[in-house]
Image (cartoon, rainbow, N blue to C red; front, side):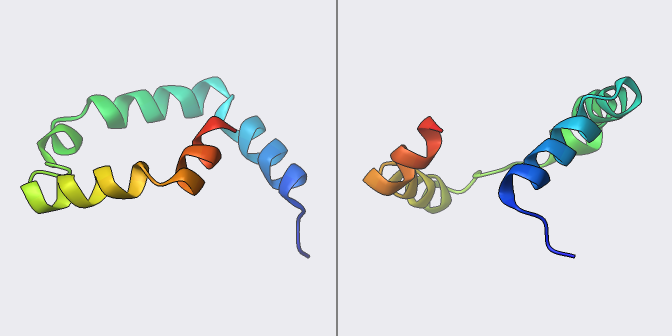
Length: 64
C-alpha cells in the first residue's frame, strides 16, 4: 500500500502530536548524547551546507 503525500503527512503529524511521543523527542534532544554530536563541526562541511541551502530551489522548498 502506497500512501499519498497528504496521507503520509497526516499520519506523521498525528504520530508526533501525541503527548508521549512529544515527551520522548524532548528527552532525546535534551540528552547529553545528542548534544555531544557536533554537526557541521568541520569548516568544509559548514561551507558545503551553506552553499546547498543558498540554492534557489532549496530556498523554495524551505518556504513550504
